[in-house]
Amino acid sequence: MKINTSSKKIEKILTRGVEEIIEKESLIKKLKSGKSLRIKHGIDPTGPKIHLGRATQFWKLKTLQELEHKIVLIIGDFTAQIGDASDKQAIRQILSEKEVKENMKDYVKQIGKILDMKKVELHYNGKWLNKLTARDLLNLEMKFTAQQMIHRRNFKERWEQGKAIGIHELNYPILQGYDSVMVKADIETGGSDQLFNLKTGREIQQIFNQKPQDIITTKMLNGLDGRKMSTSWGNVINITDEPNQMYGKIMSMKDELMPEYFELATQISLTETEKIKKELKSKNFNPRDAKAKLAYEIVALYHGKPAAQKAEKEFNRIFKEKELPSEMPSIKITDKNINILDLLVKTKLASSKAEAKRLIEQKGVKIDDEIQEDWRKNILIKSVMIIQVGKRKFVKINQ
Image (cartoon, rainbow, N blue to C red; front, side):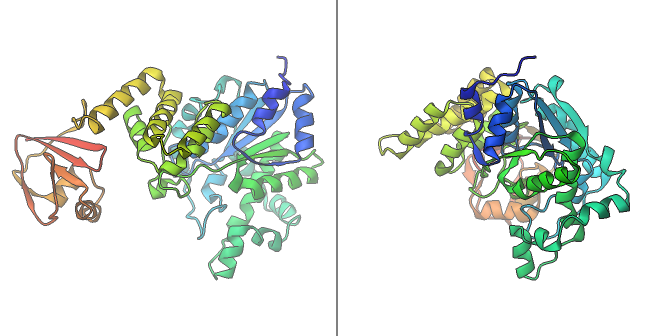
């Protein structure tokens, strides 16, 4: 297969959504050489779902795959048990092998929404990391100093604050770097928070007399609330979210986040993206129109245009025309009289009584369109009732 060396396409790959490139001249030379390059990307299955933040890196890989380079995907079944400490301010809980296997069950299927998996070289790093002896690990560790590891930003902060740093956390970059040796990576991609780990890979390759990989890091996509996208904070959009849910989440995001989402989470041209950025600064432009376009584009990427059109109509029906959703979960409640906190937990509209109480205090709960303000009250169950939590969660109660 002939390698595409188009300068225009290479320039786009190296600019859109890119935070930093290590050895740019070397990287451009490789991409223009006409040789098939081995482009490594690693992902640890620390959770069962891939969110838009992680997906930005797979879209970058797709552009490289379209040039006919070999994408080498490493699923960190071993390293996920340690957990990358790049963004952590406390020791990360070690996952069991069972938890990791459960998490990665649908990973390949999810990644297949973006990459052509038939052309991907897939590895699990447990294949070689489980075989490392204590001597092998010591030989790798001897090439680095504790100062090097602790110098990385989050470790430095934890050290200065007197917070614990696990020895296993210090080994993570070394093990991830060893992956680059095993697959003979020419290039590695990752989020900007991964830079330390990716540079460690370059050093370890040179120890094994391999040419050091060049590095492309991508910008980090913020979560719906402006913080880093994190499942534990509940501010994520997963690529497996159903269309109505995905559309609704995007419409709920802060206006100021839209420019980065257009650049990192859509395939809209950069020219059009810049035009939208300018329009958002105009007082005469309604940001809701831009957000609706953003929601449509993202839903269409993962579910197709018909699903995006349907989600748009459904959203407008509920929020513009103040109608109920055309489809909603239906739950049978046998109790004739039930405390409102128990009702919200039973219908799974709240994960706990504490959350249910908080939702009521924030006036985020409606029953038959009436705002509920007393978390102590009991609810008389009627034959049909509609419970609404927030703007997007609806449940129909049947007796």
